[in-house]
Length: 195
Image (tube, rainbow, N blue to C red; front, side, top):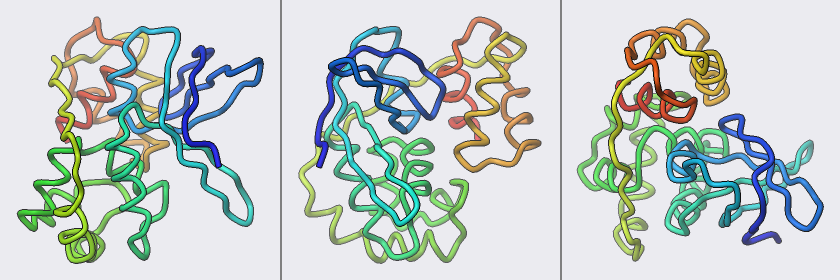
């Protein structure tokens, strides 16, 4: 199993990065929270989860070990796969997710693409005791300012669609942002925070 990778970022196309490690390029799917923390750095160390299915082998990467731990807890819930877990961690930061489960806030969880009310309630029931026992650092992501008509909007819209939003919904989320100076990652972050 691949538990951690350190290397040079060759490409960033949220939610995927291409990380070169020892001359090999690894395609790694990351939650948007990890993209926010990457900033403009060229080298990176990621905690990884290698997921194998019948038809695919996928590598998921996380800046913090806490995110990796939460990702693994999420995919243990019946009916929640890696794609939905990635969407949850992109939509909610660690503290928000922990609070939503602790406070039984199924409405907040249901705002995540791919999560309905029943799945949100199931997540709360299955995760409440397990998350209470976890010892996490509770990394919080800092809020950013908004953005809209800038050359990065198309990539941001595509990334939101890859996270499970419909085309019109993703475009509407991006159009609501008025700051022209934001990067693709910042646009995505703001769109998810405004959701």
